[in-house]
Length: 167
Image (tube, rainbow, N blue to C red; front, side):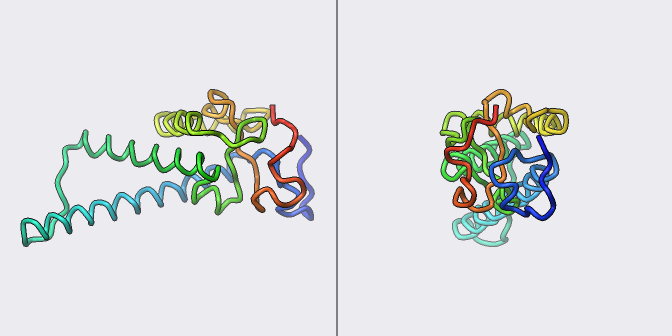
């Protein structure tokens, strides 16, 4: 793959496979979003507890295994929902990325759910992107997906729809 010229800007990257740094920054942003959702859910549960039982205000104390399980479900659900509905999460949107099949088509619910579970269970698989010729993580290889730059939602320079396969 020929690297883009600096003058190309985002339009020059449109539809190309995203590298490790862009993807890692999207992961950091998504982690912050999931943590924010978890904190809000915990505070909401504390508010319900306060309304039902009265003072003092305190979030519920859950077993460690249950907290881990709920965190897993929340993270997988967040990622799978974003990739199924729009092909993006909040972090991907910030970085101008979209998750698609290798053909450029939307991922679909089953693949998105499997990809999300793989990303949560094996997060170090992202680092395979640095070694892969097509900038694919381990999760991308398993579900046959790709992460591409899509700054304009498929509107500029051909976008991700109808582009040649990324295989």
